[in-house]
Image (cartoon, rainbow, N blue to C red; front, side, top):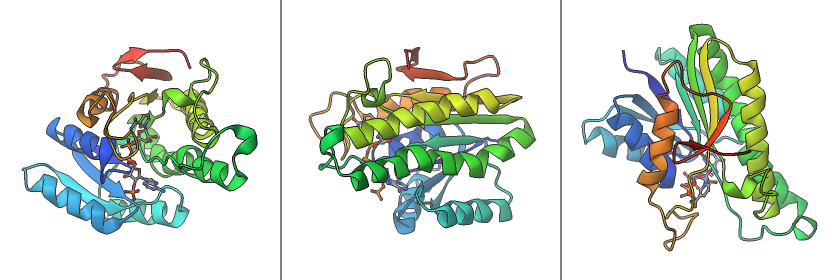
Length: 231
Ligand SMILES: NC(=O)c1ccc[n+]([C@@H]2O[C@H](COP(=O)([O-])OP(=O)(O)OC[C@H]3O[C@@H](n4cnc5c(N)ncnc54)[C@H](OP(=O)(O)O)[C@@H]3O)[C@@H](O)[C@H]2O)c1
């Protein structure tokens, strides 16, 4: 039976491209978005291309929303084998740490850090129970610890936190469950802008690779274009 992948922020950008690429790879995809109508619309468009995609409302900052999505899937007998934590925000008021309002930093932590913790808590226990799972966390070079966390403070701290979530969870899982992190690079999406050097499809390649790693593949790693890099 095909594995099932759940993608957050799947309605546009890298999440949309990743959802399509995962489905083309033969996975059943749960394309989620905080706007349920947008999720269902994009899923329907992909189903129209013969792909196995279901749309679901899921806001990573809202525990009730995540739990409700998990409940609907469980009621339909859908087990999530792959979790792609892709949802992200980039606020134009974000900047240097000491000049960025706390609410901006909190908003970033809510999506990039706590959002991933929330979805992992909802879906990784099932992976552990079944003995198989892949978690793909979409981080950013701007959150690189080894490069000095160079991005705008809220975004960079949230993404640095996502790296920490990756390492912490990777240290706790067992069986054929792998937890990895990736940097998609500078990608032409609403977030990256039209001048970005990479396409969403290019970014989705590493996402699919990590989502479908074999049993002897890596875990607790950070990758760019399938190559490992320092945290
Ligand atoms: N583009 C780049 O150059 C770049 C570089 C490094 C890392 N990244 C990361 O790659 C990921 C995808 O980014 P992108 O470039 O595709 O950006 P995007 O086009 O702006 O898409 C962001 C996605 O995240 C969703 N989202 C935001 N808040 C959410 C929430 N609370 N719950 C669920 N979904 C939420 C958005 O939904 P709405 O449509 O409802 O807003 C949208 O689907 C992000 O994590 C981003 O930080 C991007």
